[in-house]
Image (tube, rainbow, N blue to C red; front, side, top):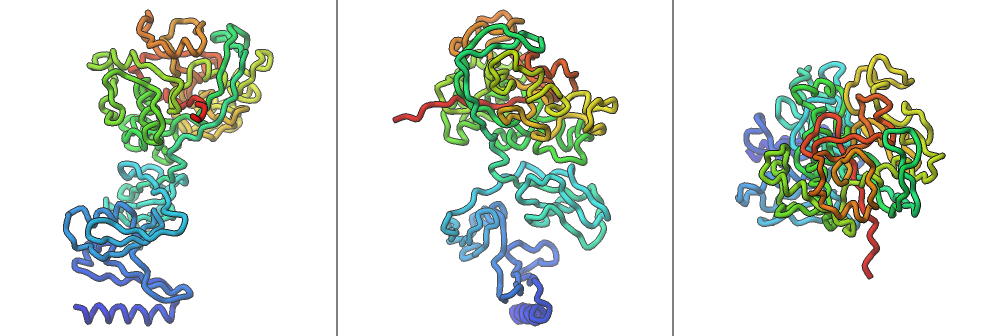
Length: 471
């Protein structure tokens, strides 16, 4: 009853005045079963006394108004994502925000995960992924609310398997960081599959390259799906990531078509102009399921004939020449080239490969018990600030089809071709991976896959042309 409710509030205020604590008063029906977030009134007594607005996420807020009923009219909340006071007027949420405007809401993956959670006493649980901005813990599938702390304590002991967490990442974590790469009017290719040497001279235009390989979190944010095999819950490889976060692992198990689709979809998300054209494919509405994964797909010929417009400002794959030029740190003289992507020839410092990925390691910093790819940016960057260009996962390139030789064409003629006249059916990949020997991690090493192929050892990074601003 209303009289009982006010008695509860009065009693709580009396307790606060003595203890200077924070308390909650629950108002509403079925409060012992599942109280709604808006039925919690917080009484704050840290210096000043008074009621604090219900603190909710955008998702929790929206859930109150999905039924079309007007029960939420006049409800006022504090949105912990936008940092705004918001009021439902019956048809929309009215925001009152700080002068600088609302913050961009963090993004959550599609579901909560059980991997990457540690506990010492089965009461306190900690999410080890510190890249997130907010955390939402679940106990037996029931949300415990969204919080900024990555730890939660339950009053009684819980089973580890019953605790899961959903991460909310800041937008900066979900967007590839692009670094400028100054070109060269006369750059020497390295000889195929050799340590150093020259093969041909080529002009490299200025461009941008992503600091790291595209991560699992970045790919899922754009494509809505995480296809990686090294992720929580995977039947074969999930056991290798139970104690570590996967958001910063490079996405893998992606084919060449997935990579160019990601580039176009990311361009659309950031209001840039798409570089790739696939006849009769609308990337605005394209979903992950519409991308070919085998040669029997109805649209496979269209995807194989994809073209790239390098005059656009959107994202794309690097050409093979751009990839090697960036991996060599923009160093033009062959005599100064290093074997691997770094400022010296110590692969242990710059890359993940079989020698720091197993018990017979020759490196000083082994991860002996961790099978599979590693989080990006854990190794030293090369001269341009680029990480993991030797090792971790192979990286798709934009090229004409692999033909056993280095391309003889300049980037201009190479990239404008649709590549439909090639006699081979493989696309280029570069960089080596976490399970290969050091020879395959050489900057000059060229590998190839069917474009519909993938696996736990191949991902990609993105590039972008530097387009002059229109006058």
